[in-house]
Structures are given as structure tokens and as C-alpha cells.
View 1: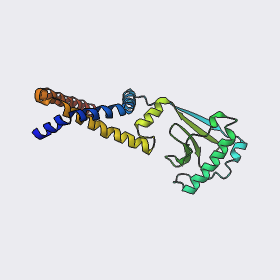
View 2: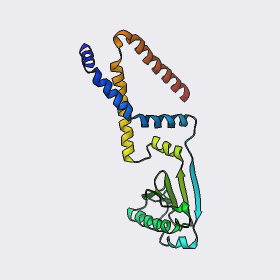
View 3: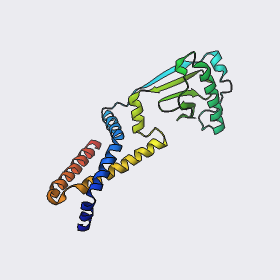
View 4: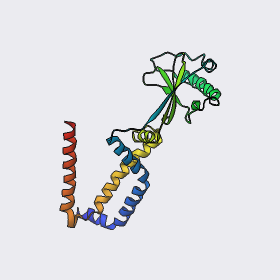
Amino acid sequence: MKKLKNIVKKHRSKLLALHIYISLFFIPLALMYKITGIVCIFGYFGGVDRQVVVLDELQRAYLQGFDFPLGIQSKPSQRESARAQILALLAQSQNINQNLAIPFSTQIKDSRDKNSFILGGTNHSIEIVKSNPSEIIIYRNDFLANLMALHFNRAGFWFGALSFCFVVFMGITYITGLLMCDFKHNGKKYTLTMLLGFVISATLGVYGLV
């Protein structure tokens, strides 16, 4: 223990610098998680604008080969064929109807029930039934809904990796913060404060789950 104290005392300035720089770097993520966490407590998860666009005969002509099996996972070749047809439809229609703009992301996937294709990303996507579609459904998230998508790790691999680093390094800042505390003179107060936090958090959590 004495050896650890000497190491901490020797490298106190480095620990403080590490603590500060990590905290500053992750301020944007910390604010985002705080905002979305508070909003979740009040039961609001943002708004999603859902718009149904009925296709006319000319638009349906671009989807003449759009007949894929319902209820099963589509093959990559089927998804690519569907993607090409949807993009052709949108390219011809967006000048007539601005709501039919091509999403920034043109990745395509099956819906959860596997009865539709979804083209686009979390912010802006288009859903179209797999067999003989007569309409398409457009989804657009508002700002808060996009923040909630980030909170629940629906923004791809790289943001998920950044969020994981945030969790790890926030743990490091707690450790460096504790190492810099003067437990020699205020150890009892610090320990009692931590124990009080554990007891209150555990009690309220268990009580809320009963």
C-alpha cells in the first residue's frame, strides 16, 4: 500500500493530466448521454415522421420485377436487385415529389418481419413491401430521435467503438480521481460517502423493481 502511495505521489501530475484530457475529449459524448438519459426518465424517445406515398402507374413500372418471397430472409442478390429498382424509382420521382429523395445511406436490409425491404439509415429510411408494392413508407427522425439512436448504439460500428471507449475511459477517470484523493486525512469521509452512494442506489433500485 505504501509503495502504491509513493507511485501515485510521484506521478500525481501525470495522473491529473490524464484525468483532465480524457474528461475534455469525451465531453460531447457525456453531454449526449446525459441529455438522452434525462429524456428517457421522462418517457420521451423523440419523434419519427412517417409518411405513406402511394405509387402511381408510372412509378410502379420501375418495380415490375419487384416480387420477392415474404417472411423469409432475402438473399444478397435479391437485396441488390431490390436496391437497384428502388434507387431507379427514387431517381425518377424525387424531382416530382421531394419526399421521395434518396437517403444519404443506400444500404438495404430486411425488415424485422422480413416482409419488407428498408433502404437508408437510422435518420432517413424508406420501407417497401417485398411483393407487388403499391406504396412506400418514408421515415425521418427528428433531432432527439437521432440522439436516442446514438444512445442505443444504432449508429454503426465506429460510433459503437467510440462509445465503448467512452465507458472504459470514464472508468479510468474515476480510478485516477480516487488515486488523487487524500485518503490519508479524509479517508473515512470518502469511504462513508461511497458506501452511502452504494446503499442508496441499491435500495432505490431494488425497491423500484419489486
